[in-house]
Amino acid sequence: MKVVVDFDLCESNAICMGIAPEVFEVREDDFLYILDENPPESMRPQLEEAVMSCPRAAIKLVED
Image (cartoon, rainbow, N blue to C red; front, side, top):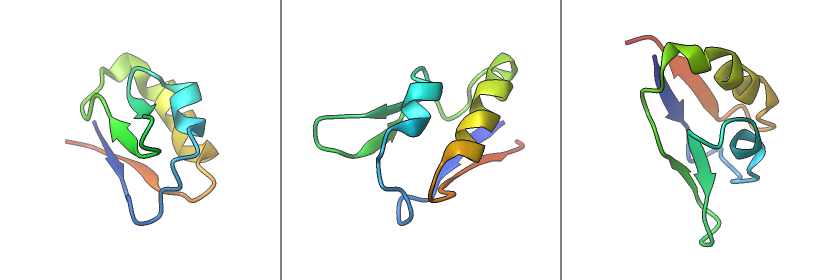
């Protein structure tokens, strides 16, 4: 699976980072960074929670 973020929608509010800090990081420049675009399958529950929790629906999971 691949993590995809629509940066035009993303507000960098760090909700996803709170759920999956191994994958998402909001840095001091207030921009969201994807630390691991292809995380392990074991992270799927966390990532699905991040997708559902994003207030702007900016995150999606794409199957490789």
